Amino acid sequence: MKKLFVLAAASVAALTTTTSCGLVGAKLTTDVDTLAYAIGVDLGNMVFQFDSTLNVDIVAAALKDVYAKRSKLTREQAGAFIQEYMTVGLARKNAAAGQEFIEKAVKNGAQTLPSGLAYKIDKPGSDKKIALGDSIYVKYTLTLPNGQELERATEAVPMLLQKSRLIEGWIEGLPLVGEGGQITLFLPGDLAYGEMGTPGGIGPNQALKFDIEVTKVVPGEQPAEE
Image (cartoon, rainbow, N blue to C red; front, side, top):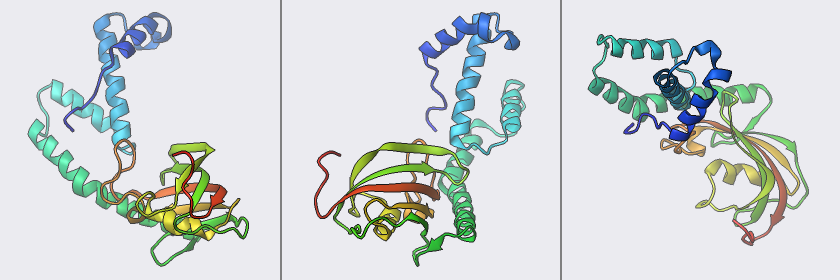
């Protein structure tokens, strides 16, 4: 939380340029008004990426309270709460949401493994099955439980099925299909990126959904490109 937002000069310049023709409703008649709006846009994007379920009205109310010098939290208290939320509260929230996500997948026909991984085999593929140490080429789409798409690989991506290279959910799930197979994996947080999450998108204990197509399996060899 050291950097709350970054305001790109190029973005501000572009926004200023379009004020007269594209933002008439906002009444941005001065550079200062445009700057204020640009900061709001940047802050709004940051808040959305932080947690898209936050109540935007409360965020706006906090901004007004700060300007009116009647904030319900000091800056230090706010920072401490955010830190605690990021390390404890968000992880707990995501774990609970992830459990509901997996349960819903099972109700909709997914099968489960003892580890908690849920899966649907959309196409079993050939008898050329995947084993640990194999090289695989896959197309995939990664989405969050709320349906937000984080990543899509429309071209086959080479990977090595090795525990040090891939998340546990893939290590367990991919051997369930063969070459040409298609599978949907519903990963609880502990089979994805765990309590650490990843910078820029995947929170602590975040459940994930992967739609995967295995286009090629090369037994025991590393892909030519990575």
